[in-house]
Length: 133
Image 1: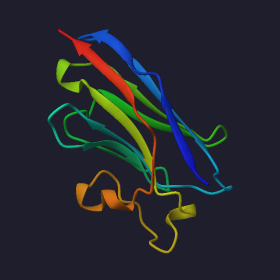
Image 2: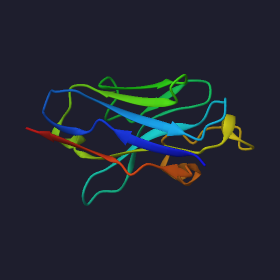
Image 3: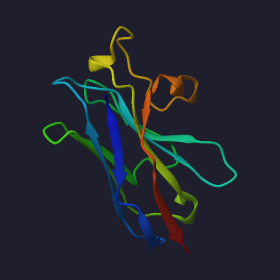
């Protein structure tokens, strides 16, 4: 059974940095589709960044140039380095994976496209990020 657990959230002032971690368990020795999502109070969940099974990354326009997603396969851990944080980045951040080795029969990763968010089968409980002005 695949599980993902986020950590690293906290409160920072605008302009500050945080690094989120997502520890995955239950993986086989394969690559997986995995990404970060966030949801602010009163707003819809949105994709932040994702990595596909080839290591290609995708970012939301709102975080490009400020956030960096990376994957340490040896540790089965996903990271999100967040720099130049803004108050509008305040949200609960979630890690999600489809749990399918190499994308399974689908053969492609859903990325951060909201149309395909249902392809992510495993979600963490989230870690809160609060950015004050």
